[in-house]
Image (cartoon, rainbow, N blue to C red; front, side, top):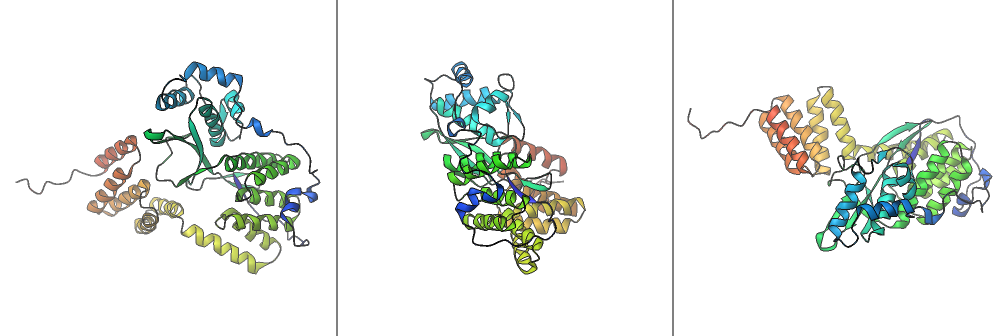
Length: 377
């Protein structure tokens, strides 16, 4: 998770500059002691409880090969009859997720990684660049990031395990990450959850953990800046946002928050500079252009939809949903040949057989069969 403030308050006064990273993490203006204990110990995140061990003993044959073990574990967890895991927005440890049978994508990944490693599988966390997913909580927009699990099966290849495989696409960019980066995700999420309920002390402690595990994990610095800003310390917020951009120049939440911060400080020049960075990046994002194309399509502006989609396809050539909407747009314009071409291309790119079948049935439903030019009338 990463937050962007929904609205700016009255102009703030500047505070002394030159805030160090140690000072940012110490949180002196927030009145939190340096040695305050966090609520979750390091070993708890991936700890396997006795209940989890008993579950694994029942459902996974330890002497089986890697592929059978993976299938047994995945089926036991995902099958509603044996486990019944349900989604909610809370970030939990592996054992807490198992106990509650509920959690978000990171909770599920924690649980699966812990259990898979316990039965001898080689598993890793993955960051997945899904299309931006925003929700609104209190006075902030929340950008939800995605993490899933990669299982290395050796000669049998690799397998992705995702909390919601129906929405997972192989076209999404993804990268294997270290356990340290995964811990940064975990502690950042928990910190945001604590901040959202007004628990400043716990939030700061978890942000310290997140930045300690991975100083280059920009969302933790961005969210720490929001914590400072909510408590009336804009200079500390500015320092945290700038540190986020040092870690990742493409962190649009940090850029957007800096724009809002400078606007609140009355620094219109720098505010405009950062606002323009957001606009430029957003306009070049193929998924943002896809959203604009969908809006144009619904408004019956098919030329506008086609323009946005062609840009999106140039940036992301293997995204079947772009091609599918292009086909629909051409169909609405009456260009049957182009429509069939793009719809067929979407079918070819579909990541799963289920998607391919869906596209095939939609093509047959939407368009008549092509004429056989060789057949005599």
